[in-house]
Amino acid sequence: MLKIVLLGPPGSGKGTQSEKLVAEYGVPQISTGDLLRNAVANGTELGNKAKAAMDAGELVSDDIVVGMIRERLEEPDTENGFILDGFPRSLSQAEALDELLERLGRPLQAVVHVKVDQEEIVQRLLERGRADDNEDTIRNRLKVFEDSTAPLVAYYEERGLLSAVSGMGEVDEIYARIKNALPAEAKG
Ligand code: AP5
Image (cartoon, rainbow, N blue to C red):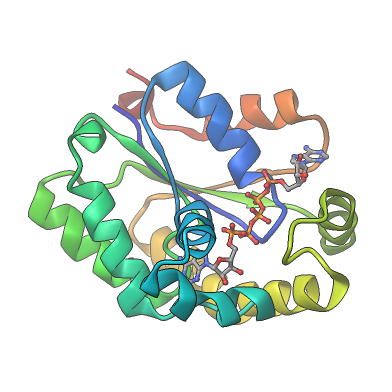
């Protein structure tokens, strides 16, 4: 019954922690980054439109990303819950998500903000080496996070949904912190 957002800068471990939540709670992870990378790999029209922004570490346009999320949340496997990883990433996306979830009658239970120091992020991503993990693009992704995504912290705080956890240290320790931060209704 988990209906949550994992919010955090690039490399904060959203994908890593989502996998653990999926294994424990049996709800799907919805990563806009993964959906977009699949579209690029398959050479779809949407993927071709998104590629330049992804390569530069900029946000892909809302019409593409919100449309993808709408379609995904209308699939039946999300009826009992979902973990949103990398969405929303801007106030306009957060507002679109609110509207969508209200229409579906599935309000969010919690938003977990995973916080990691900038130099640790750069180190982790350079070691991983995905196509957008070169130093210039990483620095731009961090800037985009600060400019566009960080304002969501206040947005969700005002709605009483936000918990912040440290994303520094061992994966299992961070997972325990995330579980502690979830409200009882989400874990039940
Ligand atoms: P996306 O795929 O969402 O990338 P990101 O936010 O930059 O996040 P990452 O996948 O790099 O990191 P993560 O937090 O998931 O960490 P992970 O677990 O992988 O987005 C890519 C692009 O798509 C964007 O730049 C944008 O262009 C576009 N996009 C996506 N969503 C969008 C949206 N909503 N709107 C518009 N555009 C959008 O871990 C990272 C590495 O660290 C791994 O190697 C992992 O093994 C390692 N690691 C994890 N935890 C630890 C730990 N505790 N200690 C040491 N290493 C660790």
